[in-house]
Image 1: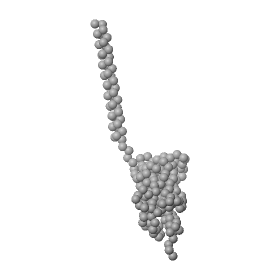
Image 2: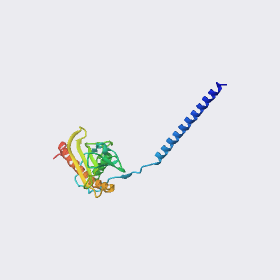
Image 3: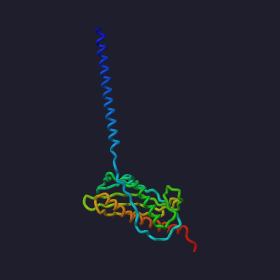
Image 4: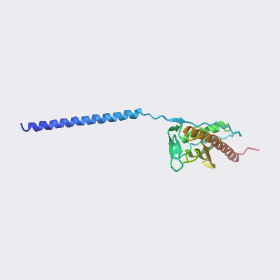
Length: 228
């Protein structure tokens, strides 16, 4: 009789402990499910901005050689879709809930391709990754593609592209040049900053196009002179 009572008490305690554990596990599972549902329910909306070229086309002779445009390299802050800002010191930031239509290097490469096509001075032009054959190639680094926010003064869109024109079959560098534009924004808000970027590429991209075509043609004529 005495041994039966302790055994019954122990069994009851075990059942109570198991029930408590099951209740705790169920509560934890419910909390995790609720957290997951809340996380799925919160969706960030991004404003997406693109850049276009509307500058007047620079006239010039049509070249016969073909050009490949390489995807530019870029520092980490610029190599994403986020619109980068720099508050005046060495730190980088981004505009909240806003992004470009593509990563910085891809966006800039597309603008370069559009610039060459709009010039109507070269027929054979394409991305380096395409199946287009190339005689020359344009490669480079997108060193800066950010909005500069000084503590005082006007906000600027800052674009820096370090370009190299190379003989594609041999990878020999024919010429190099750094292009830079600092365009004042009409305001400190994001739409005004994007408009400043638009004006910046309107100037910089045609400069790159004209330089590459003139320099490439000079090197091409030196290598393959026209018969007199």
